Length: 392
Ligand SMILES: Cc1ncc(COP(=O)(O)O)c(C=O)c1O
Image (tube, rainbow, N blue to C red; front, side, top):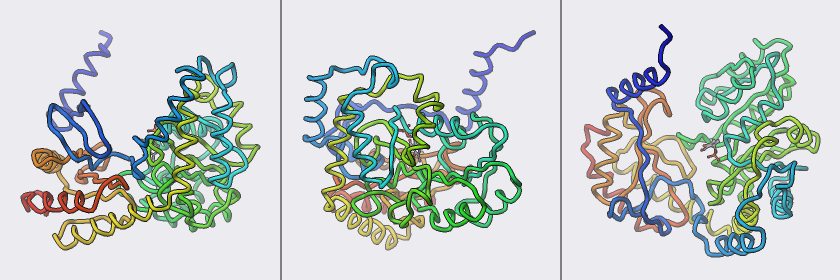
């Protein structure tokens, strides 16, 4: 008899539940900066990606409102039909200026940008070499594009070199997160760029967590590494993290962007992001570039947190960015720690497999320029109260 697909799904859900790995969305009733309300309880949020504290900036909200009054809510069509407004064109220009790229193309999310870029660039004759801790969207995109996906140990340039050698004469894309989403550490971008140059491979960097936070004027991890468009021909970043908006873009040469415009199916066959959102993102970029104090404040909070956590003997990761995970090992421990923190008034979601490798469940603590020093101190006090066996 033919197996029932919904029954298969139910079996997998039951397995996940037995392993304590079931996921549930929490409903936020209200949010005000880093303060959120869930089920009537006020919590201090330490797990959003709003690293610069822009998600509720009144200037960005005003830009969204004004543009919505002018252009409405929906773009009503794909970019190539009649959904491409002057707000989108302006945002693409601004993103090019910021990242030092010739051209840029907007996508409705980071997932769609990675998928579109890889489907346009790769086919079954190509090899895609990737860090094994890359974001799921990069790993899945290479497979969905039909390329041979070859992973290398985390941040291991020699491992990447071996995979490229094994690929022989195949056209090859090497893709890495700029800042790793679950560890906060930065990829060895200069080494990877030299490797790609030597091996004739194309380098793609997903800077979802670096843009706005690292580099001169927040231009990202690639800028911080002093790499040009020639070194990193495919640069992708999102608008939904440090910029506090939603959406993403790929930037690079005019030839790359023309190729994506023609062949990136997740660009061609989808409704363009609302023009009002593009106007909001434009304002967010302006603020992110101009207000260095946000990065300075974030850096000071990161240093304060790391110093305090080290004094408490917490197992910090090697991260200089806003992502400061504390690996607790068992999923059960991570969930228990997250619950205890919540009882104390903090929202820090536990990150469990398969998002992170088995045995590496963690509290993914994120800091933001919207936090105050006293918020960080309070979090440290709460972390100090966690049972030691959960941490060791
Ligand atoms: C490194 C990385 N790339 C891509 C994405 C996907 O971006 P989006 O949330 O805009 O789909 C994320 C996060 O969600 C990410 O962390």
